[in-house]
Image (tube, rainbow, N blue to C red; front, side):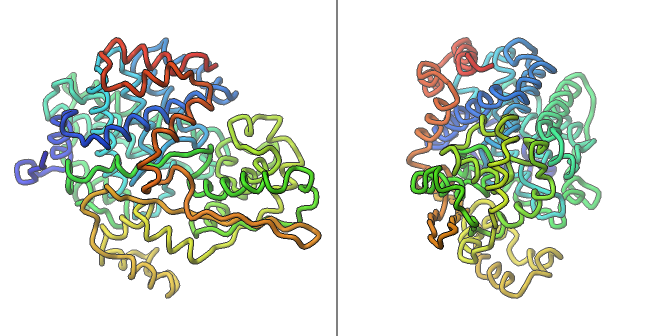
Length: 501
């Protein structure tokens, strides 16, 4: 499928034209396989959240996903999937919260079969990821706190395959973006508000869909121009990134999967800590003098951002899932990092915080360079921006060495994402009081986009689902999603969440 930009000048019209016509048969088989792994991994994240008091409070407040309307179910599923930073990441954004969960929430109401469900999710992935990549060059705190792609993801996942007119789509986009949800960074980290970072824009978008169906009009050119949404959200909006190579370059192919709850910037360090736990055991933890995490600049910046919000037993789930120190301490002490690591008893353990206080994060220049040259999270963005990136204040004021790295990274934008990579590595040194040092390093963690993940993504998602208590029978049904009819899809999704609290 090609996009004809001449016939539809507005961006929302071009997105609608492409998304509403996307059929399952248009999607490459390897992209379909990745999408099924995305669904399984997302369900595992939801199961994990339901085992924690935070997730249980969400259900008590808003209802059990299987017992409420499609719109309310999508809202609750989105909140649960984002609660513990256990979701998937692509170039660019945290897509599953809206793109997968809206399709799942409306499964019974819309009656899509397995192929239609996958097509709706892929269409939503592609549109949401492209919007996020277009506004990533801006001053607003990005990553999981970015609310805006979920508006597009929810509209597409809701409307795909239903036969709605193109004008209904563009009205839904225009209404959804008419009033923007803006995250507040302090609240994001110091309260439980983060659970709504996707859920609120999802519900806003779904309301916009209903309004459009009943005749309310949205702005057709809501994205374009000096007063458009793109200009408001980004210092340098990459407008061309939204519709360029639709149907030829699949952002779904950039998906990465997390083995641990927590930011992707921390996953490699956590993997190192798990190996160091096996080497050290728990008996030597009292002899730890310091723990040095060598990492890319992204991990250093995240550590600096979250440290003021770490308040021992009063620390919020939002902050603690961004904490490299607490995560490493929990792994060294127990051998794993799971949802139980964030329970009240664990967060209140003074021994973990004493160990976390010994963690120091420093930049390793080689790891920063590897991170920037990979596709996700920054490399392709720099390549798409090209020479324009040098005019950004945040780039222009960088040290000369950083400017040189960016200049050498900028090259032609990738024609496909068949070989997409993420490389956020780490080395962890545990220094004991007797002078001995135990070290472990990773160039990238398990699940990050790359050849290993393209080969093993199904097994990564499978193990995550089983670790969170999902049954092998439910897993088999999800893996056979392509062959399921509409009733079987609903049954498979219910089975996938069965037994979770």
